[in-house]
Image (cartoon, rainbow, N blue to C red):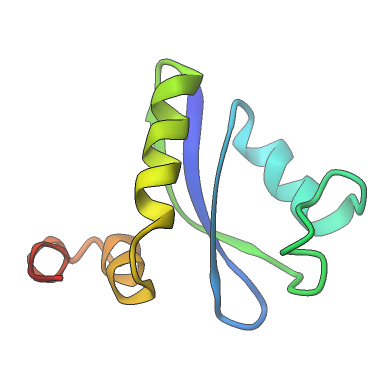
Length: 89
């Protein structure tokens, strides 16, 4: 199983990613300097706020790239599961 995820950073920004082990990846973002993205190194701690499961890495990556293009407002609506607002945006 693969996951698309969104974490909220200490500065309230949102970061999107994909992984095959969600729990491990969040730990890496928070505690492992060598395995965390450059973007997150100064924005710790991060907190998981949203995730979706996918059967293949390709589908998780496709979703990641789709959502990375969204505005923060649209991502926030997804995190809140406000599908009316999400459609509007």
